[in-house]
Figure (cartoon, rainbow, N blue to C red):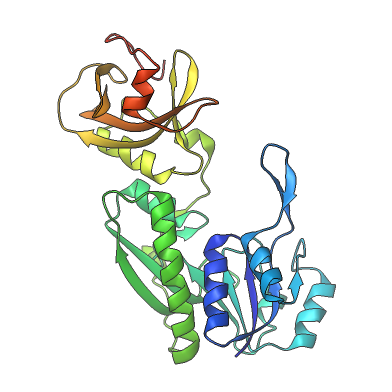
Length: 305
């Protein structure tokens, strides 16, 4: 099938690679303009751009699809459908109407649950036991279009946003190839059951030790790798990358009640958190044993103060 493809990060690049492997012709690849990244803030191409250049695909990086020039280019190409995956730009009604078979979105949740920008992180924060991929026929709303295909996966106890992202990216790639092949009949979403996955803010990543150990560990997993769950140690930022909840009664929230090679145990509002991997500001990610080799944690010490 002759397609447009619109996407930006690695999640989208995995799908683009699968579409090419399945024999689809990508007549134009759309991705966001290069963004400053890294310590030098040099412009960095997206994962989709890198793949498109490597495969010799036609490429465009418009700042908006509202521009008449890009809309006219799409009409002139005349692809049958557009596949959209984590593109990051709004598709106006005029752009949605250009492909003969419409625009298909690869969404990383089981719609109508977690419509919006951060479905992977929100599922982890909420303690969901399953998630999945929805292939949706796009309309002008926020992830409100008709469902074409869904597949579920279990969220594992050890899943982080990164590991769940990687599994969903592979599943999304398989699902979009299947949806284009089978062309399933659309079915409307149940709007009454919708929940919303708002963008993640850095303030959400700050650990409140008065919360339960289970909630704190969900937070750690949801914000690994970005932006990283944070607390403070002696007034300096400390990132927590891995931890596990303990049911023991531990005392004042944030207090360090034990430290050894198996974990740094910190009291929470309910239970305690055993910190397994952490990172000082400007330092490397370290297991607790390596961290303790270079730091002394007094029994009366409290994190987050």
